[in-house]
Length: 330
Ligand SMILES: Cc1ncc(COP(=O)(O)O)c(C=O)c1O
Image (cartoon, rainbow, N blue to C red; front, side, top):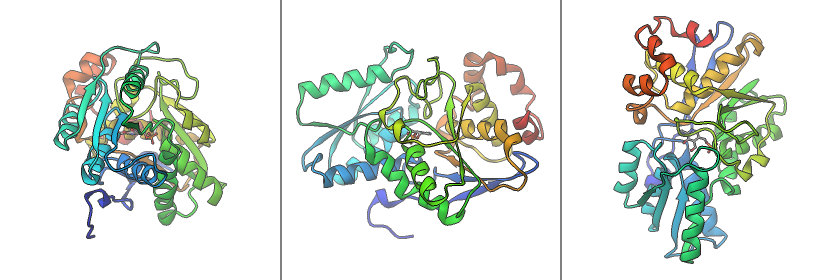
């Protein structure tokens, strides 16, 4: 693979077949973490910027701003550096230390808000800061991934087609929901091309995206504290709300099998495990892993962090099972 621009370093064809998640089927896990900024969000960043250039929203000299819990911020930082735009990322204390440093390495400005919004998260605070900044500076352009239909189109054009190229008619596809860009785009393409595919959306308990009760969440990626408008474009058959303790347990068990995944991947796979009894034997099951685990070394993979924030898992940390798959299903 030879490319001319760093943002073309997108690897859409990487799947790993996970055995042992259940006895009666394997999971084709789509690994998005090998793209240049380490996550699925590079596709959304590149597509949103290109389309906003095309429709005239972004012009030469525009300064861009966006709210992100990390991965989109990093992807936009790289894309803006490659295309010559100044970029400000508005994030919150859940951003990983490394991601924060990398955003700055690409030359972007990073603002961390510290006040919770009325739902106990930070999204409302991040958005109201951006709205204030937009009022004060009319050269700023807000990408607004939560409302931007190009975020959805990005995944219809890439992620969905990559899945169907390798698995032309999957029986089940499991997709995590953050902004719901991935869910919206992949589900639109699947509904058009393989309507029999059962689409299972995964969210974290505490997220209000689909009307759940608000609650504290510590793992970035999935969930929101204000419902994203583009969720209206998402189509799915079932919705699973997963506790973050199951996310951590799943991530750590898979790490002991040699697969170090990010938090949202753990949530999606915990969802597959909890749904396994409803999946017929030998079904074609696809799940999307938005990023890998290295940026979670100080959180999900840190015993101290887990003991502090998830004391109910403290005992399990010292007794990780030799056969993780059985535990994932329990
Ligand atoms: C690690 C991770 N997982 C999942 C998601 C959710 O993807 P989407 O915003 O397309 O719903 C994100 C979004 O930022 C993410 O960073």
